[in-house]
Length: 261
Ligand SMILES: Nc1nc2c(ncn2[C@@H]2O[C@H](COP(=O)(O)OP(=O)(O)OP(=O)(O)O)[C@@H](O)[C@H]2O)c(=O)[nH]1
Ligand SMILES: [Mg+2]
Image (cartoon, rainbow, N blue to C red; front, side, top):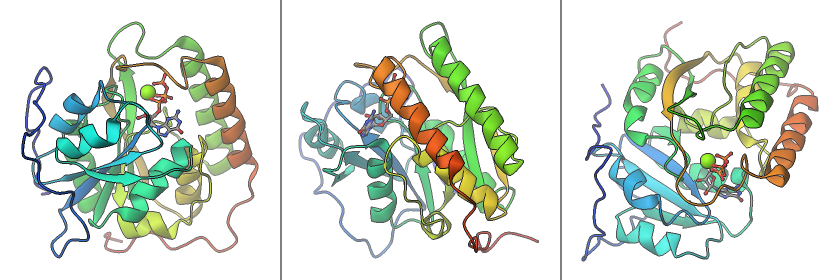
């Protein structure tokens, strides 16, 4: 069992620590799991998101050029902050993965739409060998959490993924868990909106077992950047199409070690 329980309830808003610990560097004893949180101007959501990181785990907030003090706020709340000046969701996610040290790495959006407290069972599924990659299937908690055009686009991508790889997923969501070394072995190259899809495609090509679990999807805090804007949606669709056009990697890396055969 991977330890980890939420430190606070959904309504809790932990106050910034007045005397925060210095950001953690390379550790002799890394935590059992780390949560990579790509972050572009998410000051409003950070207190809740970081308050929901399971106890004993570490948050890696990847500051992707924020101008709202997100990096300082995250550090003040005890997160490890990694700075990635190159814009793009994939650039931020990959900087976090590259900086991570734990055996298990999770990804979660940093806008308050997804609850990191739901991650421990996902990691446990990987640890136990039940799956190699676990995705959170987003279940909107109400109107406004997930605009219709974004849901339709996502469903279309899921259908294309199935045609391309045979893998049946109902959502290509951003919340995930897998082994760090195995993720690095996928050699992901996309640094924009195609990153999450490329991860699934390459994992499928490599014979990973991919599963999904339901996770609540709430209206984000702060200003929408992707699904709430035409430009963001268009860019995401273009990036994902480019990923699906890529031929399978010639010699896919073997499935992650340590799983029962
Ligand atoms: N869009 C975008 N998000 C980034 C970037 N770098 C980091 N992020 C973070 O990536 C996460 C996902 O981005 P979101 O803007 O929530 O994308 P989305 O959920 O598809 O759409 P909205 O919530 O409607 O904006 C958030 O935590 C962002 O702060 C970037 O360059 N672009
Ligand atoms: Mg969002």
